[in-house]
Image (cartoon, rainbow, N blue to C red; front, side):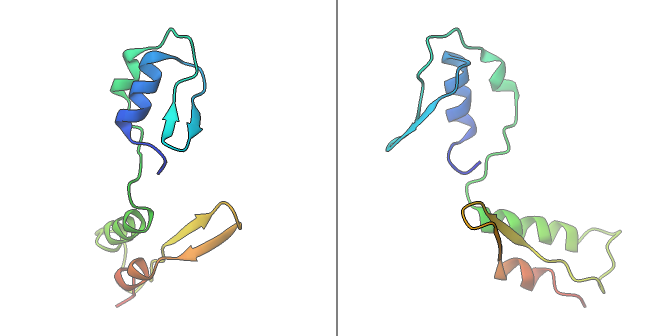
Length: 98
């Protein structure tokens, strides 16, 4: 979800419902249409910063009233190329148990 923004996917779907292509300058429309403006009403949950997003999520969980301070919360990013989980140090600091 890092390769595009809500605006990009909404624009692509407004032009065509066919699968877009990814080129050196980003996604571009290859369809002939028709598209739909309904994509404007969907929150596509795009992510501009993976590690920041993970740290924010861990912080939200850490501060939730139903999560005891004695429980450690961890944050990782899944690397689709290697299949490994990559630790997010900022998330680990935020999620430390008291």
